[in-house]
Length: 113
Image 1 (cartoon, helix red, strand yellow):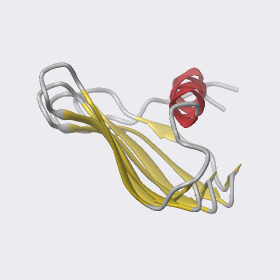
Image 2 (cartoon, helix red, strand yellow):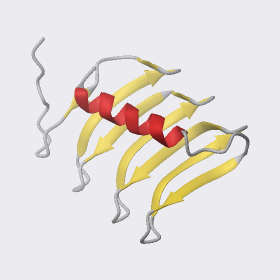
Image 3 (cartoon, one colour):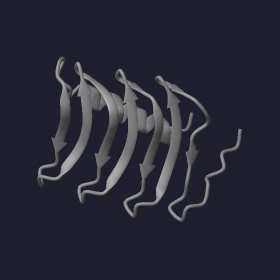
Image 4 (cartoon, helix red, strand yellow):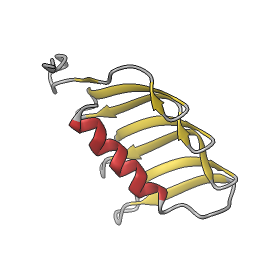
């Protein structure tokens, strides 16, 4: 797993600590400037459905999906300019295929084994 993906997953884990133990609905966390920093759907206190993190200017930074509190589906990270930085796919909490990282110009980053 790439260092970039590990960094993202650590951020996701840190955010998990901010959730209430019970609850249903949409959770939103805000920057001091009033813009949304994070939003996610909660079902019985667990993320379930689409979750998004934002830059301070309101552009999407990360987006992913959850099922019963576990990553499930595509995970994408974006540069501030809106171009794709990283993509990965999860099935119920487990990485389904190798993640792909991109340079800011859109070129795929090649990792040597």
